[in-house]
Length: 369
Length: 169
Image: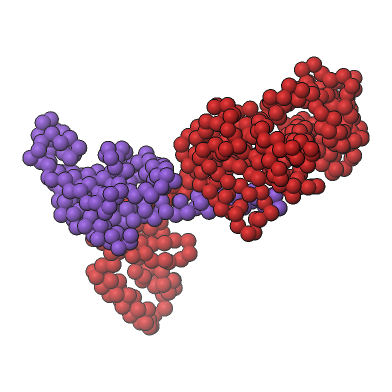
């Protein structure tokens, strides 16, 4: 699923194609992706092994006017992406926040090039993650100690904003959930109840405690009405210092950014599962009815399994059995007769023709009296 | 709960056994037409008294009989919203494929979840007691299937929730 994978699939494919091209290729692509990310990839014939990748992504925090520019922390994180291959161009392309110069000659040969290109394709997720990390990182700063309670509205997907509220010693993230269909709301509500139930168990004590409520939590009092009007309720996660320590910060950030997408994916797959199961049940129910129909004839139909390649349906009838028995007896008597005169070929005739003819064909049919 | 199921199904079975005495009866109003009188309800003399069998407030069965046709409407229990949507989805799925069942009505009677229409032709093609067995078995299977679906959806949700929270550990 593209919105949960860190690497952009389209960007990955284009860079792989560019790298693997035997002849110089000119590329000028515009890409638009989930989360309103916009890419521009330019490769000219005069510089075949150099590509320029421009990125534009809406700010994670829409209310912050200065957030259109990337922070120094974000720039630092991008520089750490394949340092030999990726450089930040001095002049960025007009309309984009950042332009990267990719030196394809410095990508290692062999199987590692796939890994390197995939890492370059994660540039959008790096930008978003670093922005959210800065917000969560400031959890330990003076601002948090002073107790700033105003919710910060973040929008990974413009139609699905979520809120981050700093309340020392924790940070609360609140996800308003909205669905177009009522059935989606009910399936998601069942999922959230399971999420709360699993989260409260001892085994997952280290995971952030989560809760669900149908009404907006008190932390969101004062927010805009359109942000608080939902049909799926509100899911809250309590992030503590433990969850943003070291390597866990990256995972926590990515999971929070993709929570909405995760829920929607689960609802979609659950509906598919229900549909598959209904189809299977339909076959079973119809089979019962067809079985009812076939029993209407009131005949004893038995199946005989003859040789492995044929099955015969034969009908038990007393007349047939009697006829078979009499013919069999006659045949045996004829076979036992010791002829004084030997007739050439008679033995074969006796074996071949003194047998009861078979009335049922190998294809199988039902003989009715 | 299970203690009321058997008497409920037995009552339905006995009522169907008495009601499923259908014979061919051409339409009295239109020449050379043969219509199920229980659907038209144009001639009161051809209709029998409808029978409503209730297990509880949410589960009931309406059996309407006429000289040449019989209509059975069922209301299935729905304990919560999830069962409600699962029941609606499943029964609508079956109703849309009514031709596979022959005796199933494409649209349920108002106020009910699913309806069957059995005519004298069905009774000629199929055995009466087997048809009744099918209807009763269908009712049991629907209840069972809805319960299993609900359990499966909750189990899936639990597994997905577990996988999501594992990423934080």
